Amino acid sequence: MLVWLLILLAAFTALFYLLTGMDSTMVTGGWDRWGLIAAGVIMSLYALLLMSGNQGRMKKSIRDLGIWLAIGLALIIGYSFREDIQFITNRVTAELAPPGQGIRVSNDNSGPIAIKIRRRSDDHFTARGTIDGVAVSFLVDTGASTVVLKPADAARVGIDTKNLSYTIAVQTANGTTYTAPIRLKSLSIGPIHLEDVDALVAKPGNLNENLLGMSFLRRLRSYEFSGEFLTLRQ
Image (cartoon, rainbow, N blue to C red):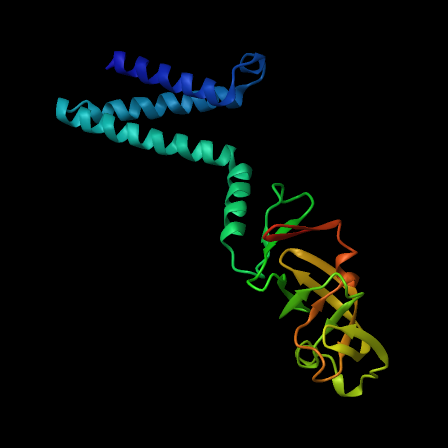
């Protein structure tokens, strides 16, 4: 039993050394590490006591203990590389996401935000977002000087479209239309969130899709079209 205890202790110490590294703190004040090793020794001793019944039980206990050690090692490795794993997961998700769905691809959650949006089948980019918490879809249009909303969607987010003054002429793919100026309290595309965004409401029947124009895009850190994807960075 003593031999098995020494083997398990050596294995646990080697694993601990591999994962954390040995340095002078082991001798000068690294009591937290010594505590972990002591806990490993106690666990090993307890496991050996359980295995002391007979040879068959010992083999089964060793096998079970090995499985649990492997699971523990996998959890430690996964936690250590959690940011890289999340980054890879986000990149894969962006590749598989439907058009318009913004997927965060930035590696550091505390740093700049970056999302990718897949191009739809007609070669346009649409973005699913929210205005004051209400879901709204946009056609990304760098030629539009501002965000432009259809009257129906403007009404859904709480704008009184009946009392607007449609006096501003705007050129669209369908020709000239008249719009009314408004200001949105908040506009979000995925995790990208802006407040006090200038916008326009188009006259009824003159706009087929909401436009995500430059009043939103120019306030970002950058935006980039590359192949199948549009990347927005805040």
